[in-house]
Amino acid sequence: MIDHVAYMLISMITLAILLRRFGLETVGLWTLLAALLNYGRIGDVWSKGLLSFIGEARGRNMQSDAAGYASTTVTTGAAGYLLLMSIGGAAVYSFAPHIVPPEHVELVRQNLPVMVTAYWLIAFAGNFGLAFVGFGFIWISAVQRIGGALLFFMGALALDPSQGLLGILTIQILQGAAMLAFGIIVFYGFIARNIHHMLWERQKFNQLFRFGSKLFFVGGIQLAVEPMIKLLVSQFGGLALVAVLEIVMRLVQGFRGLIISIGQVLVTSFSRLRGGYLTADSAPLRDNFAQAMQLFLGGSLVAFSLLFSVAPLVSLMFLNAEAQAGSGTSFLTMLWVLGTAWFINTVASPGYFLLMSLRASRQLFFSVMIRAGLIAVLGFPFGSVFGLDGIMVVVLLAHIISSTYLFFMASKAIHLPISKGLFEFLRSDPLIFIPFVWATGLTALWIVAPSVLNQPFMLGAYAIGLLSTGLLVLRYSHVRFLLRTVGDLRP
Image (cartoon, rainbow, N blue to C red):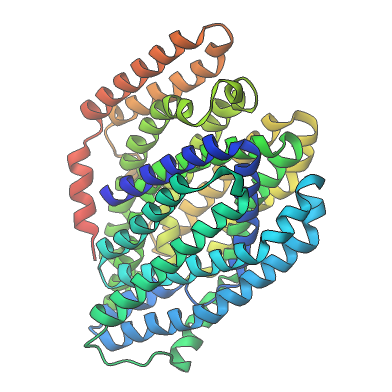
Protein backbone atom coordinates (compact mmCIF):
# COMPACT_ATOMS: atom_id res chain seq x y z
CA MET A 1 0.00 0.00 0.00
CA ILE A 2 2.84 2.38 0.79
CA ASP A 3 4.22 1.92 -2.71
CA HIS A 4 0.83 2.70 -4.20
CA VAL A 5 0.54 5.87 -2.13
CA ALA A 6 3.95 6.97 -3.40
CA TYR A 7 3.00 6.20 -7.00
CA MET A 8 -0.31 8.02 -6.66
CA LEU A 9 1.29 11.13 -5.16
CA ILE A 10 3.93 11.32 -7.88
CA SER A 11 1.34 10.81 -10.64
CA MET A 12 -1.04 13.43 -9.25
CA ILE A 13 1.71 16.01 -8.79
CA THR A 14 2.86 15.32 -12.34
CA LEU A 15 -0.67 15.83 -13.65
CA ALA A 16 -0.93 19.10 -11.72
CA ILE A 17 2.31 20.30 -13.31
CA LEU A 18 1.09 19.38 -16.79
CA LEU A 19 -2.21 21.18 -16.22
CA ARG A 20 -0.51 24.32 -14.99
CA ARG A 21 2.05 24.38 -17.80
CA PHE A 22 0.00 23.11 -20.76
CA GLY A 23 -3.59 24.00 -19.86
CA LEU A 24 -6.86 22.08 -19.78
CA GLU A 25 -7.24 21.78 -23.58
CA THR A 26 -3.87 20.10 -24.25
CA VAL A 27 -4.07 17.78 -21.23
CA GLY A 28 -7.68 16.91 -22.09
CA LEU A 29 -6.62 16.02 -25.65
CA TRP A 30 -3.71 13.91 -24.38
CA THR A 31 -5.84 11.94 -21.90
CA LEU A 32 -8.60 11.34 -24.46
CA LEU A 33 -6.13 10.02 -27.04
CA ALA A 34 -4.37 7.87 -24.44
CA ALA A 35 -7.68 6.26 -23.43
CA LEU A 36 -8.58 5.57 -27.06
CA LEU A 37 -5.18 4.21 -28.07
CA ASN A 38 -4.87 1.99 -25.01
CA TYR A 39 -8.17 0.43 -26.02
CA GLY A 40 -6.04 -1.41 -28.58
CA ARG A 41 -5.01 -3.66 -25.71
CA ILE A 42 -8.35 -5.37 -26.16
CA GLY A 43 -6.41 -7.91 -28.25
CA ASP A 44 -4.08 -8.87 -25.40
CA VAL A 45 -4.89 -12.56 -25.04
CA TRP A 46 -1.55 -13.60 -23.55
CA SER A 47 -1.27 -11.79 -20.19
CA LYS A 48 -4.79 -11.96 -18.71
CA GLY A 49 -4.28 -15.32 -17.04
CA LEU A 50 -0.60 -14.97 -16.22
CA LEU A 51 -1.00 -14.53 -12.45
CA SER A 52 -3.36 -17.48 -12.31
CA PHE A 53 -0.98 -19.80 -14.19
CA ILE A 54 2.07 -18.67 -12.21
CA GLY A 55 0.15 -19.12 -8.95
CA GLU A 56 -0.91 -22.66 -9.83
CA ALA A 57 2.61 -23.61 -10.95
CA ARG A 58 4.15 -22.27 -7.76
CA GLY A 59 1.44 -24.03 -5.77
CA ARG A 60 2.71 -27.30 -7.29
CA ASN A 61 6.32 -26.17 -6.65
CA MET A 62 7.03 -26.09 -10.40
CA GLN A 63 9.25 -23.00 -10.62
CA SER A 64 10.37 -23.80 -14.18
CA ASP A 65 6.75 -23.81 -15.36
CA ALA A 66 6.10 -20.52 -13.57
CA ALA A 67 9.12 -18.91 -15.24
CA GLY A 68 8.07 -20.39 -18.58
CA TYR A 69 4.62 -18.81 -18.38
CA ALA A 70 6.15 -15.44 -17.49
CA SER A 71 8.77 -15.54 -20.25
CA THR A 72 6.27 -16.69 -22.87
CA THR A 73 3.96 -13.83 -21.96
CA VAL A 74 6.77 -11.26 -22.13
CA THR A 75 8.09 -12.54 -25.46
CA THR A 76 4.64 -12.62 -27.02
CA GLY A 77 3.92 -9.14 -25.73
CA ALA A 78 6.94 -7.70 -27.54
CA ALA A 79 5.34 -8.25 -30.94
CA GLY A 80 1.73 -8.39 -29.82
CA TYR A 81 1.55 -4.95 -28.24
CA LEU A 82 3.32 -3.35 -31.21
CA LEU A 83 0.70 -4.81 -33.54
CA LEU A 84 -2.21 -3.80 -31.30
CA MET A 85 -0.99 -0.25 -30.74
CA SER A 86 -0.37 0.17 -34.48
CA ILE A 87 -3.92 -0.93 -35.26
CA GLY A 88 -5.22 1.42 -32.58
CA GLY A 89 -3.16 4.27 -34.00
CA ALA A 90 -4.51 3.64 -37.48
CA ALA A 91 -8.07 3.70 -36.12
CA VAL A 92 -7.50 6.98 -34.28
CA TYR A 93 -5.94 8.46 -37.45
CA SER A 94 -9.00 7.52 -39.50
CA PHE A 95 -11.61 8.67 -37.01
CA ALA A 96 -9.78 11.76 -35.69
CA PRO A 97 -12.19 14.19 -37.44
CA HIS A 98 -15.08 12.58 -35.53
CA ILE A 99 -13.53 12.41 -32.05
CA VAL A 100 -11.55 15.66 -31.65
CA PRO A 101 -12.30 19.28 -32.56
CA PRO A 102 -11.34 20.22 -36.17
CA GLU A 103 -8.47 22.45 -35.06
CA HIS A 104 -6.74 19.48 -33.37
CA VAL A 105 -7.08 16.86 -36.13
CA GLU A 106 -3.76 17.57 -37.86
CA LEU A 107 -1.90 17.77 -34.54
CA VAL A 108 -3.27 14.38 -33.52
CA ARG A 109 -2.30 12.74 -36.80
CA GLN A 110 1.23 14.14 -36.73
CA ASN A 111 1.91 12.79 -33.24
CA LEU A 112 0.36 9.33 -33.57
CA PRO A 113 3.65 7.48 -34.40
CA VAL A 114 5.25 8.87 -31.25
CA MET A 115 2.18 7.97 -29.17
CA VAL A 116 2.09 4.41 -30.56
CA THR A 117 5.78 3.94 -29.65
CA ALA A 118 5.30 5.32 -26.14
CA TYR A 119 2.34 3.13 -25.23
CA TRP A 120 3.90 0.05 -26.82
CA LEU A 121 6.93 0.40 -24.55
CA ILE A 122 4.81 1.01 -21.44
CA ALA A 123 2.51 -1.96 -22.16
CA PHE A 124 5.48 -4.23 -22.91
CA ALA A 125 7.14 -3.27 -19.61
CA GLY A 126 3.89 -3.96 -17.74
CA ASN A 127 4.15 -7.71 -18.37
CA PHE A 128 7.36 -7.79 -16.33
CA GLY A 129 5.46 -6.11 -13.50
CA LEU A 130 2.93 -8.95 -13.55
CA ALA A 131 5.74 -11.51 -13.50
CA PHE A 132 7.30 -9.85 -10.45
CA VAL A 133 3.98 -10.03 -8.58
CA GLY A 134 3.41 -13.64 -9.61
CA PHE A 135 6.77 -14.65 -8.14
CA GLY A 136 6.02 -12.78 -4.91
CA PHE A 137 8.34 -9.82 -5.58
CA ILE A 138 5.68 -7.17 -5.23
CA TRP A 139 8.23 -4.62 -4.11
CA ILE A 140 10.18 -4.98 -7.37
CA SER A 141 7.00 -4.31 -9.35
CA ALA A 142 6.53 -1.23 -7.17
CA VAL A 143 10.08 -0.03 -7.87
CA GLN A 144 9.45 -0.35 -11.60
CA ARG A 145 6.20 1.63 -11.46
CA ILE A 146 7.45 4.32 -9.08
CA GLY A 147 10.70 4.70 -11.01
CA GLY A 148 8.75 5.21 -14.23
CA ALA A 149 6.49 7.74 -12.54
CA LEU A 150 9.50 9.67 -11.21
CA LEU A 151 11.01 9.84 -14.71
CA PHE A 152 7.76 11.23 -16.08
CA PHE A 153 7.59 13.72 -13.20
CA MET A 154 11.12 14.99 -13.87
CA GLY A 155 10.39 15.19 -17.57
CA ALA A 156 7.26 17.24 -16.92
CA LEU A 157 9.34 19.72 -14.91
CA ALA A 158 11.93 20.01 -17.67
CA LEU A 159 9.51 20.27 -20.59
CA ASP A 160 9.16 23.47 -22.53
CA PRO A 161 5.40 24.22 -22.69
CA SER A 162 5.82 25.23 -26.32
CA GLN A 163 6.48 21.56 -27.17
CA GLY A 164 2.86 20.77 -26.33
CA LEU A 165 1.54 17.26 -26.97
CA LEU A 166 4.77 16.08 -28.65
CA GLY A 167 6.79 16.97 -25.55
CA ILE A 168 4.53 14.95 -23.25
CA LEU A 169 4.71 11.91 -25.54
CA THR A 170 8.50 12.13 -25.85
CA ILE A 171 8.86 11.94 -22.08
CA GLN A 172 6.54 8.90 -22.07
CA ILE A 173 8.86 7.15 -24.57
CA LEU A 174 11.80 7.65 -22.20
CA GLN A 175 9.64 6.44 -19.30
CA GLY A 176 8.55 3.27 -21.12
CA ALA A 177 12.08 2.46 -22.33
CA ALA A 178 13.51 2.78 -18.81
CA MET A 179 10.77 0.59 -17.29
CA LEU A 180 11.31 -2.05 -19.98
CA ALA A 181 15.08 -2.12 -19.49
CA PHE A 182 14.58 -2.50 -15.72
CA GLY A 183 12.17 -5.39 -16.25
CA ILE A 184 14.49 -7.28 -18.60
CA ILE A 185 17.54 -6.89 -16.36
CA VAL A 186 15.82 -7.83 -13.09
CA PHE A 187 13.71 -10.74 -14.34
CA TYR A 188 16.25 -12.48 -16.55
CA GLY A 189 19.33 -11.35 -14.64
CA PHE A 190 18.12 -12.17 -11.12
CA ILE A 191 14.67 -13.76 -10.60
CA ALA A 192 14.76 -16.39 -13.36
CA ARG A 193 18.52 -16.60 -13.75
CA ASN A 194 18.88 -19.99 -12.08
CA ILE A 195 15.53 -21.40 -13.23
CA HIS A 196 15.78 -23.52 -16.35
CA HIS A 197 13.08 -22.49 -18.79
CA MET A 198 12.52 -21.58 -22.42
CA LEU A 199 12.00 -18.01 -23.60
CA TRP A 200 8.88 -19.07 -25.48
CA GLU A 201 6.92 -22.32 -25.37
CA ARG A 202 4.11 -23.15 -27.76
CA GLN A 203 2.27 -25.27 -25.17
CA LYS A 204 2.29 -22.52 -22.57
CA PHE A 205 1.33 -19.92 -25.17
CA ASN A 206 -1.63 -22.10 -26.20
CA GLN A 207 -2.76 -22.38 -22.57
CA LEU A 208 -2.44 -18.63 -22.05
CA PHE A 209 -4.14 -17.96 -25.38
CA ARG A 210 -7.07 -20.28 -24.66
CA PHE A 211 -7.69 -18.60 -21.34
CA GLY A 212 -7.09 -15.12 -22.70
CA SER A 213 -9.33 -15.68 -25.71
CA LYS A 214 -12.16 -16.62 -23.38
CA LEU A 215 -11.64 -13.25 -21.71
CA PHE A 216 -11.26 -11.41 -25.02
CA PHE A 217 -14.70 -9.88 -24.81
CA VAL A 218 -14.31 -9.36 -21.05
CA GLY A 219 -11.15 -7.33 -21.58
CA GLY A 220 -12.55 -5.49 -24.57
CA ILE A 221 -15.70 -4.43 -22.80
CA GLN A 222 -13.84 -3.58 -19.60
CA LEU A 223 -11.33 -1.39 -21.45
CA ALA A 224 -14.17 0.35 -23.28
CA VAL A 225 -15.66 1.91 -20.13
CA GLU A 226 -13.12 4.74 -19.68
CA PRO A 227 -13.00 5.78 -23.38
CA MET A 228 -16.81 5.74 -23.52
CA ILE A 229 -17.14 8.02 -20.50
CA LYS A 230 -14.50 10.40 -21.84
CA LEU A 231 -16.07 10.47 -25.30
CA LEU A 232 -19.48 11.22 -23.79
CA VAL A 233 -18.05 14.00 -21.62
CA SER A 234 -16.14 15.39 -24.61
CA GLN A 235 -19.29 15.32 -26.72
CA PHE A 236 -21.42 17.17 -24.18
CA GLY A 237 -18.81 19.22 -22.33
CA GLY A 238 -15.66 19.70 -24.44
CA LEU A 239 -11.98 18.84 -24.00
CA ALA A 240 -11.56 21.10 -20.95
CA LEU A 241 -14.17 19.07 -19.08
CA VAL A 242 -12.36 15.88 -20.14
CA ALA A 243 -9.27 17.23 -18.36
CA VAL A 244 -11.34 17.83 -15.20
CA LEU A 245 -12.73 14.29 -15.55
CA GLU A 246 -9.15 13.00 -15.78
CA ILE A 247 -8.29 14.67 -12.47
CA VAL A 248 -11.31 13.06 -10.82
CA MET A 249 -10.66 9.62 -12.32
CA ARG A 250 -7.02 9.67 -11.29
CA LEU A 251 -7.95 10.63 -7.75
CA VAL A 252 -10.63 7.94 -7.59
CA GLN A 253 -8.42 5.25 -9.12
CA GLY A 254 -5.52 6.35 -6.95
CA PHE A 255 -7.39 5.91 -3.68
CA ARG A 256 -9.17 2.83 -5.04
CA GLY A 257 -5.78 1.42 -5.95
CA LEU A 258 -4.84 1.39 -2.27
CA ILE A 259 -7.26 -1.50 -1.97
CA ILE A 260 -7.39 -2.95 -5.47
CA SER A 261 -3.60 -3.42 -5.54
CA ILE A 262 -4.20 -6.33 -3.17
CA GLY A 263 -6.13 -7.97 -6.01
CA GLN A 264 -3.03 -9.33 -7.72
CA VAL A 265 -2.12 -10.99 -4.43
CA LEU A 266 -5.64 -12.40 -4.20
CA VAL A 267 -5.54 -13.95 -7.68
CA THR A 268 -2.28 -15.72 -6.83
CA SER A 269 -3.60 -16.74 -3.40
CA PHE A 270 -6.90 -18.10 -4.74
CA SER A 271 -5.09 -19.90 -7.57
CA ARG A 272 -2.63 -21.59 -5.22
CA LEU A 273 -5.51 -22.78 -3.04
CA ARG A 274 -7.30 -24.06 -6.12
CA GLY A 275 -4.12 -25.72 -7.33
CA GLY A 276 -3.70 -27.42 -3.96
CA TYR A 277 -7.31 -28.64 -3.63
CA LEU A 278 -8.02 -29.02 -7.37
CA THR A 279 -11.60 -27.87 -6.84
CA ALA A 280 -13.51 -24.70 -6.16
CA ASP A 281 -15.61 -26.54 -3.57
CA SER A 282 -13.16 -26.22 -0.67
CA ALA A 283 -13.60 -24.67 2.75
CA PRO A 284 -10.22 -22.84 2.67
CA LEU A 285 -11.18 -21.12 -0.58
CA ARG A 286 -14.54 -20.02 0.85
CA ASP A 287 -12.85 -18.80 4.03
CA ASN A 288 -10.30 -16.86 1.99
CA PHE A 289 -13.08 -15.25 -0.04
CA ALA A 290 -15.03 -14.25 3.07
CA GLN A 291 -11.87 -12.80 4.60
CA ALA A 292 -11.16 -10.87 1.40
CA MET A 293 -14.69 -9.44 1.36
CA GLN A 294 -14.27 -8.18 4.91
CA LEU A 295 -10.91 -6.67 4.02
CA PHE A 296 -12.16 -4.93 0.90
CA LEU A 297 -15.21 -3.51 2.66
CA GLY A 298 -13.20 -2.09 5.54
CA GLY A 299 -10.39 -0.93 3.30
CA SER A 300 -12.75 0.70 0.81
CA LEU A 301 -14.52 2.60 3.57
CA VAL A 302 -11.18 4.02 4.70
CA ALA A 303 -9.85 4.81 1.22
CA PHE A 304 -13.00 6.47 -0.11
CA SER A 305 -13.64 8.40 3.10
CA LEU A 306 -10.19 9.93 2.69
CA LEU A 307 -10.81 10.48 -1.03
CA PHE A 308 -13.96 12.51 -0.44
CA SER A 309 -12.26 14.64 2.21
CA VAL A 310 -8.91 15.15 0.44
CA ALA A 311 -10.08 15.73 -3.14
CA PRO A 312 -11.69 19.19 -2.68
CA LEU A 313 -8.43 20.54 -1.28
CA VAL A 314 -6.34 18.77 -3.91
CA SER A 315 -8.49 20.23 -6.69
CA LEU A 316 -7.18 23.69 -5.80
CA MET A 317 -3.71 22.46 -6.76
CA PHE A 318 -4.90 21.42 -10.23
CA LEU A 319 -7.36 24.17 -11.11
CA ASN A 320 -6.58 27.86 -11.05
CA ALA A 321 -9.26 30.46 -10.34
CA GLU A 322 -10.26 30.68 -14.00
CA ALA A 323 -10.62 26.91 -14.37
CA GLN A 324 -12.58 26.64 -11.10
CA ALA A 325 -15.05 29.22 -12.37
CA GLY A 326 -15.40 27.38 -15.69
CA SER A 327 -15.16 23.62 -16.27
CA GLY A 328 -13.94 23.10 -12.69
CA THR A 329 -17.43 23.75 -11.32
CA SER A 330 -18.28 20.14 -12.25
CA PHE A 331 -15.37 18.70 -10.27
CA LEU A 332 -17.21 17.93 -7.04
CA THR A 333 -20.26 16.47 -8.81
CA MET A 334 -18.09 14.08 -10.80
CA LEU A 335 -16.11 13.25 -7.67
CA TRP A 336 -19.20 12.33 -5.67
CA VAL A 337 -20.78 10.20 -8.41
CA LEU A 338 -17.67 8.44 -9.69
CA GLY A 339 -16.34 7.98 -6.16
CA THR A 340 -19.57 6.31 -5.03
CA ALA A 341 -19.71 4.16 -8.17
CA TRP A 342 -16.16 2.89 -7.80
CA PHE A 343 -16.56 2.40 -4.05
CA ILE A 344 -19.37 -0.08 -4.77
CA ASN A 345 -17.29 -1.75 -7.47
CA THR A 346 -14.24 -2.03 -5.18
CA VAL A 347 -16.21 -3.64 -2.37
CA ALA A 348 -17.42 -6.32 -4.81
CA SER A 349 -14.03 -6.79 -6.51
CA PRO A 350 -12.94 -9.89 -4.51
CA GLY A 351 -15.63 -11.61 -6.56
CA TYR A 352 -13.87 -10.51 -9.73
CA PHE A 353 -10.48 -11.79 -8.52
CA LEU A 354 -12.01 -15.07 -7.38
CA LEU A 355 -13.71 -15.64 -10.74
CA MET A 356 -10.46 -14.71 -12.49
CA SER A 357 -8.52 -17.30 -10.49
CA LEU A 358 -11.22 -19.90 -11.24
CA ARG A 359 -11.11 -18.86 -14.93
CA ALA A 360 -14.86 -18.36 -14.93
CA SER A 361 -14.87 -16.35 -18.14
CA ARG A 362 -18.64 -16.40 -18.70
CA GLN A 363 -19.49 -14.80 -15.36
CA LEU A 364 -16.70 -12.24 -15.83
CA PHE A 365 -18.05 -11.39 -19.27
CA PHE A 366 -21.55 -10.69 -18.03
CA SER A 367 -20.31 -8.65 -15.07
CA VAL A 368 -18.43 -6.20 -17.31
CA MET A 369 -21.04 -6.39 -20.09
CA ILE A 370 -23.73 -5.10 -17.74
CA ARG A 371 -21.62 -2.10 -16.77
CA ALA A 372 -20.36 -1.17 -20.23
CA GLY A 373 -23.65 -2.02 -21.93
CA LEU A 374 -25.68 0.31 -19.73
CA ILE A 375 -23.21 3.16 -20.30
CA ALA A 376 -23.17 2.55 -24.07
CA VAL A 377 -26.96 2.26 -24.44
CA LEU A 378 -28.08 4.96 -21.99
CA GLY A 379 -25.12 7.36 -21.98
CA PHE A 380 -25.88 9.27 -25.17
CA PRO A 381 -29.66 9.70 -24.71
CA PHE A 382 -29.26 10.69 -21.05
CA GLY A 383 -26.40 13.02 -21.98
CA SER A 384 -28.48 14.60 -24.75
CA VAL A 385 -31.33 15.35 -22.37
CA PHE A 386 -29.59 16.01 -19.03
CA GLY A 387 -25.99 16.77 -20.05
CA LEU A 388 -23.20 15.81 -17.64
CA ASP A 389 -25.70 14.97 -14.85
CA GLY A 390 -27.37 12.41 -17.08
CA ILE A 391 -24.04 10.76 -17.92
CA MET A 392 -23.12 10.55 -14.23
CA VAL A 393 -26.46 8.95 -13.31
CA VAL A 394 -25.95 6.27 -15.96
CA VAL A 395 -22.40 5.55 -14.76
CA LEU A 396 -23.55 5.15 -11.14
CA LEU A 397 -26.45 2.88 -12.11
CA ALA A 398 -24.18 0.70 -14.25
CA HIS A 399 -21.71 0.16 -11.41
CA ILE A 400 -24.42 -0.70 -8.88
CA ILE A 401 -26.06 -3.35 -11.06
CA SER A 402 -22.82 -4.94 -12.31
CA SER A 403 -21.28 -5.10 -8.82
CA THR A 404 -24.38 -6.78 -7.38
CA TYR A 405 -24.27 -9.40 -10.14
CA LEU A 406 -20.54 -9.98 -9.52
CA PHE A 407 -21.03 -10.67 -5.81
CA PHE A 408 -23.80 -13.19 -6.39
CA MET A 409 -21.92 -15.04 -9.15
CA ALA A 410 -18.73 -15.29 -7.07
CA SER A 411 -20.63 -16.71 -4.09
CA LYS A 412 -22.32 -19.24 -6.35
CA ALA A 413 -19.01 -20.30 -7.95
CA ILE A 414 -17.58 -21.53 -4.64
CA HIS A 415 -20.90 -22.94 -3.40
CA LEU A 416 -21.22 -20.29 -0.72
CA PRO A 417 -24.92 -19.83 0.09
CA ILE A 418 -26.02 -16.32 -0.77
CA SER A 419 -27.52 -15.79 2.67
CA LYS A 420 -24.24 -16.81 4.31
CA GLY A 421 -22.28 -14.66 1.86
CA LEU A 422 -24.40 -11.63 2.76
CA PHE A 423 -23.99 -12.41 6.45
CA GLU A 424 -20.20 -12.52 6.05
CA PHE A 425 -20.33 -9.31 4.05
CA LEU A 426 -22.44 -7.41 6.59
CA ARG A 427 -20.84 -8.88 9.72
CA SER A 428 -18.54 -5.87 10.13
CA ASP A 429 -18.86 -3.45 13.02
CA PRO A 430 -21.49 -0.87 11.92
CA LEU A 431 -19.34 1.90 13.39
CA ILE A 432 -16.81 1.52 10.56
CA PHE A 433 -19.37 3.19 8.26
CA ILE A 434 -19.29 6.46 10.25
CA PRO A 435 -16.28 8.06 8.45
CA PHE A 436 -17.70 7.18 5.02
CA VAL A 437 -21.16 8.57 5.78
CA TRP A 438 -19.59 11.74 7.18
CA ALA A 439 -17.26 12.23 4.19
CA THR A 440 -19.94 11.63 1.54
CA GLY A 441 -22.26 14.01 3.38
CA LEU A 442 -19.58 16.69 3.36
CA THR A 443 -19.03 16.21 -0.37
CA ALA A 444 -22.74 16.66 -1.04
CA LEU A 445 -22.61 19.84 1.05
CA TRP A 446 -19.58 21.18 -0.85
CA ILE A 447 -21.43 20.71 -4.14
CA VAL A 448 -24.03 23.24 -2.99
CA ALA A 449 -21.88 25.48 -0.77
CA PRO A 450 -19.62 27.18 -3.38
CA SER A 451 -22.64 28.96 -4.83
CA VAL A 452 -23.38 30.67 -1.51
CA LEU A 453 -19.99 30.91 0.20
CA ASN A 454 -16.78 32.69 -0.82
CA GLN A 455 -13.52 30.93 -1.70
CA PRO A 456 -11.47 31.69 1.48
CA PHE A 457 -14.25 30.29 3.66
CA MET A 458 -14.46 27.14 1.50
CA LEU A 459 -10.72 26.55 1.83
CA GLY A 460 -11.08 26.54 5.61
CA ALA A 461 -14.16 24.33 5.41
CA TYR A 462 -12.33 21.82 3.22
CA ALA A 463 -9.46 21.67 5.73
CA ILE A 464 -11.86 21.09 8.64
CA GLY A 465 -13.61 18.37 6.63
CA LEU A 466 -10.32 16.58 6.00
CA LEU A 467 -9.22 16.82 9.62
CA SER A 468 -12.55 15.58 10.99
CA THR A 469 -12.70 12.67 8.55
CA GLY A 470 -9.14 11.67 9.38
CA LEU A 471 -9.94 11.59 13.09
CA LEU A 472 -13.04 9.47 12.45
CA VAL A 473 -11.01 7.03 10.34
CA LEU A 474 -8.44 6.64 13.12
CA ARG A 475 -11.19 6.12 15.70
CA TYR A 476 -13.55 3.72 13.91
CA SER A 477 -11.86 2.04 10.94
CA HIS A 478 -9.73 -0.71 12.60
CA VAL A 479 -6.75 0.09 10.37
CA ARG A 480 -4.38 -2.26 12.24
CA PHE A 481 -6.75 -5.18 11.73
CA LEU A 482 -6.95 -4.44 8.00
CA LEU A 483 -3.16 -4.40 7.67
CA ARG A 484 -2.88 -7.75 9.49
CA THR A 485 -5.49 -9.25 7.16
CA VAL A 486 -3.47 -8.17 4.12
CA GLY A 487 -0.50 -10.07 5.52
CA ASP A 488 -2.63 -13.18 6.07
CA LEU A 489 -3.70 -13.19 2.41
CA ARG A 490 -0.21 -12.93 0.96
CA PRO A 491 0.68 -15.94 -1.20
